[in-house]
Image 1 (spheres, rainbow, N blue to C red):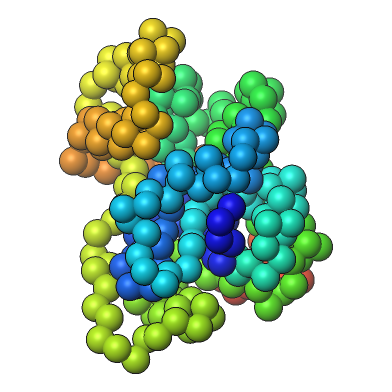
Image 2: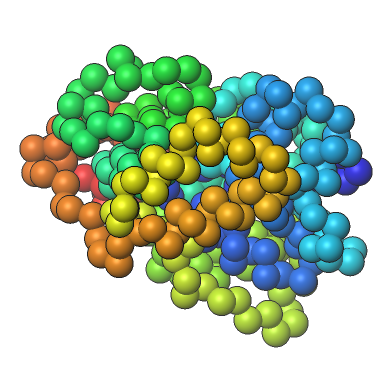
Length: 291
């Protein structure tokens, strides 16, 4: 690429990564990828393409700010060793940001997010979490529908630390970010040696990429149909993504999804307990609010 990516938000899924990306993009010296998920490092077909072609696809020239640094987000990267190695090869000085959410809540939020996108055909969350590995279709599907695996944070952080120095990895808990997003953003601006002395007022009230219940499932089925996918490939990639996001967002009910059952919540708490204890003991992450 013409310029190195200086900071990458790598996960976890459904932990506030899209909101963090949008908030940070308000800094006058940051040019954020105009496509929400920067798939260059994780998708083999994109990684094989010339850097300049990918650069033009993810960073629209009209949106590049003068004398700015490049930042991007890919929430699935946390779970991909290959993508992490490619990131290090691209820029060994890259700063990584990890947002961690209570894995019980993250799993249920991801389920409803996948229902919204049409990536999850089953309505039975209880069944899915009890036989997760039997449902994977391929490696990418295993990441996108990782209700259990995606919450094993200790495994992914140890993988990151085997590639990147610890001082380049910045970990925040979802609850911390949600309660004071401006503080988190300004700490990351400082990490990037960006000016925060000027009056930078960040708009942090909007919740980006929110979950919810689909209004009309038929619309989601039409969007995901092979005929629609074949037709939309004639539309430029960036415009196609924007249209997809707009249509899907307008098809969400203005209501919360149903509460998780106490049986499923207890099952997940028990499942993640060992991983959370290792996270606290080995990495120093306080997980008392997750118990």
